[in-house]
Length: 213
Image (cartoon, rainbow, N blue to C red):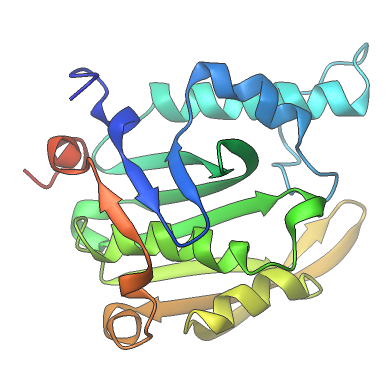
């Protein structure tokens, strides 16, 4: 164990083409530099009038990372993974749990750079965190949401076995939009053929942080 105080830094998720590891401070500026314009951020995030849009989005990315680390509790947590291909940072994959010890439900968020989309890596990155969630963490359900016109994200979810779980209306900038909600059960995951395509390492020392020790 390299970091006894924050062993999540030692988690490694490996798929046929990708490696995922928990983001460190040193990854934040490179990640902000590749943040695509279509990656959703909380519209309520603080922005700064003297900064341009790109710098503001990079600031939000940094503050989201620090907020997640500083507010971590077994009941509510967010794991932030960098997605790497042969050592090159190509995206982000998040996994989070709210009231996790009782609900055993995980949610996810992600983005890839434009240059590597369409290669199946989005499915691999999501499968990697699902292998962690449904494996050592013992999740019962995985949920995800996307705008109804985010066809790529919804296609990734369907390919991994998620099924429709309703819709909800939200403001999207100045106009209303619809979010599609999807859900995957543990049983669906175990029979999907994806669980053996990702290898999880370094999780045993982390279980206390998820309320699972």
